[in-house]
Length: 472
Image 1 (spheres, rainbow, N blue to C red):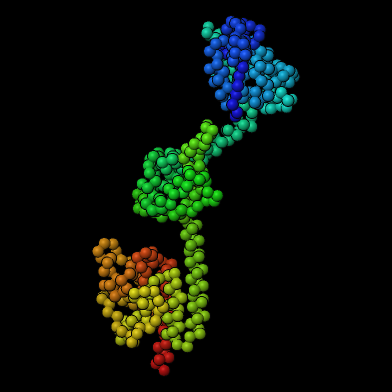
Image 2: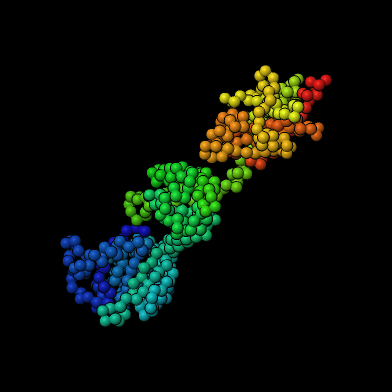
């Protein structure tokens, strides 16, 4: 709403004791002349009341007990076009602010508030000075004089569409902060939550009130730097043009959980100041972890299928079956593991036949100088894989034992995760494949085991062909 100005305003409402639109309940003493900076007809000290009325965001008018307009602020002037000097002193709205056919009904409904308790809400079609009509919603209430008798009515009104917009805005904010199907968090300029809706409270693993005022770092174990950087950017530069996907790790009673939140941000500024004053940031998000993991899994499966297809085409061009086996492993390693070892069964022992370099990335090549026995201790994962004729997954633990974990198992020093897949062909166990990952990668999971078994089946076929060819 715009600012407002009032002339002819008074500091109280009372019985109409003059006919010139002066302040009811006060003597009609002449005020200072207009040229002296005062408002004619106003008593000294009414400037404060006039300033208060003009500063209101709602249009306001008042009537004395006889229905004469005694107050008219600037917002009323903005809505209807009639100035305070034109409005104050008129009897009711008839003939100027409302159609004559509706004047009696409007007057009766407005003045009924003088004797009724509380406020009354009505909707009227009023006339603008230019002849246009505007639908307004009014809140009117009676005014009592010093003797406790009804002295008049005041009426605050606004355009219906503006009131509806305000109600919609309030309803929207309440819905967002209560029952929205996505998280809503309001953070202050210190990046501490001030309002948290039910969805966000569940996602953050706490109660709605327990989360208020706590630093985000207490709730988010990993990813808090990216989240706070996004909030700082919004405070400084404004909202980003598109949602952002943030991966975070949360600390919960059940342990740490890794989640992906698709987040949007809004800078909040006070509407009550000329210069925008930041109040904080509105952060809206949805948990899209399941969708992102499914998308990643689909991408991974698509890539691995492509690698197997390329590996099969390459292996089919190899004259030497063992070369075909190592070619298959080169394709399988991409994006899957850092090292691969091929140990074949010979005289009831495992013999290292091919491997990638221990000290640097490289292709899988036959062991230089011929196969050598693998000095595996009892209970080694490769031996267990052969015994079970199945896949074995294992990872280094924490602490001092992790430093010697790889060397104790005769693996490259940077290995932290291992997957051993048995080589089987024509009902016989030919050996075992060992895939190794460094500590900066995640441990092998069940989908990785399925992929490793597919690779092992193809490698086993090539190894079996190589042994048959060598025997003939």
